[in-house]
Image 1 (tube, helix red, strand yellow):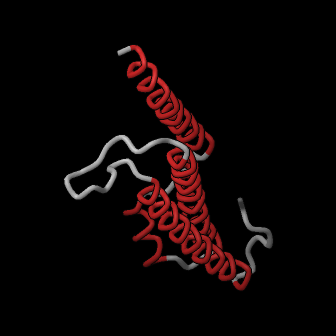
Image 2: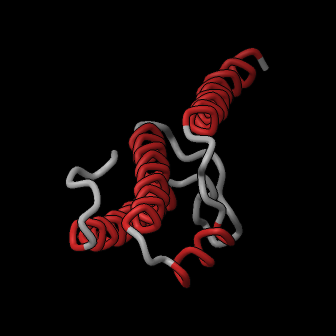
Length: 140
């Protein structure tokens, strides 16, 4: 019983820490940039963007999304690396672990791909800004 409790604490503590860290970092981002766009605002801005400032806002949104997805990919990659060192404990009826390394590696790959796509979109918007004569350096 004592070993099971110790194992549970070892598994739960990092997750609690990551949840707190994510909450603090996202709260800091909101405070730092009070003009973050929602998806609805982005959709409207994409339809009506005419000025360099509009395109900079879109690029900033894409960069923010890419950063969040990269962080998520990193978390999943770290979790996969950790689980690779642990014995399999939970299996489904099909014999596949519910908390398995391949699950975390798969989603890490997906989040990395999505982050790259958002980075490309941000770069495209920044190119539009340069063509419109806006700021020459991208915001990161």
